[in-house]
Image (tube, rainbow, N blue to C red; front, side, top):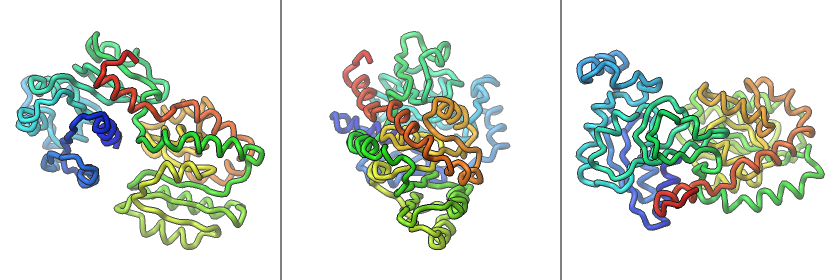
Length: 359
């Protein structure tokens, strides 16, 4: 999604963008095509972990060429094979910029394709592997250039921090309305009329139903409306819709929404996961109860909670107790969150790519 956001801004500024995607289960190839971008599709090789290990031994010239990357299995093949699969496409396109966003790719993949691109941009936030990038973007809270010392060339430009968060244009457009609306309602900061629940498009562990179950035990005003946002292919969508129908307050389940910024701007409180949606909510000053649903999100979530930007819970069972004293933290969270990012990060990144601005 962040690559799609980047591509749309590049296109607005006159660039032509194409995508290379492997057809893993849950891919967004059709969504990218619907946005008008050509996609080169790599076959879903679906190699098991044991086969990957065998392939590494037989295909790599040195035992450490793959660097034993922590997320190596996400690629479903070796870096050598993946680069080989991309080779003919890259030879044909020879792009000015190659943008790579994948935790299982490092300099060994990048070097194999280096003859066929002019400059390389890497999107990362782990800081756990080497790149040969000309530009690296890390949009996470608290990230600095020091994180990538020794991992990128000395002349690589590192754009670090939430100032460069890759948010869709709609969030910057709705920011003023959303912040003004919250300022006007601060005199009644315990009042929640619209509650937004979004745990990602897939939510494979069904956190959403757990949250609705806990919310049903909270003493709400009858005027409360709960809006749940999920993907149309979420595995527990039917169960969530059934649960929504039994809620003591009006609860709507929306799928594949195209107006997330608008929904967030009209929400008084959100319950959501960590991850890139965090920056969307911050841009709009939306106070959030955050639940960590993936371990690699925990550190950022804890940092945000430490700085009073989100209300962090360990699990959904803690919701009723946390909501009892919401009067004390809703407004402070909104005030802190809006300072994290202004929604213009993608424009800053694209300006650097196209015009070489010193940001």
